[in-house]
Length: 277
Figure 1 (cartoon, rainbow, N blue to C red):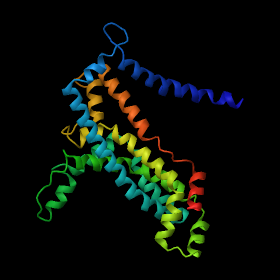
Figure 2: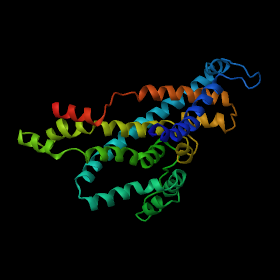
Figure 3: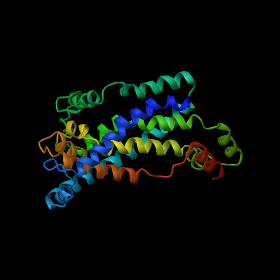
Figure 4: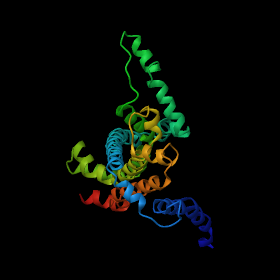
């Protein structure tokens, strides 16, 4: 009986996850004209012009994704520690405040941020009150990074907070009784015990940030081409080349899979490492 209850979820996963992935790989090695298997897309990818465009867009996307992930971790971890130390009422209110933007549509949040940062936006109008010249925020890597941090910060905060609030405070008290100061307690107890949440947060931020295209298109004003923008260009843009777009998607999926295969372990193993360390 319990196995039958899992059938709808298995069907959902096959229909909306497995089949789309299979279609991506089929399009990557499929010739629409002849309907046969082909390596034409791989040969086209070896063209110096196309290869340079793909490489440059991937490097920029990788750089901004790493910066975004690091910034989210630096902001979210102290915040998660603060939230984990509060009583239930205060913690619930603060978590709601930081998660509230996730209730809105992704594009709505990004356009709202654009309206704040544009030349005649709220930020520049506020700065003009102090006699400062208007600053061009949009159109660069800084605006894209800010947009990704703003949109993906909750994905880093929630898993870290979830793990931190489950840590038994007796471990910290025992470390203090053994002579550890605040920094030593954090380095040898708190952080090792929270590694599972940190790894989950890094994965949840890094993966969508490296594949994003809407943020770079809106906040970057289409001046910076990320790998997600390039794939979008081939699928629904003027490129109109599903084969090459599917091949780039397949390559990106493999790269992401390899980069996220970090042995994080579960909460139990993380707890054991923290206690032993």
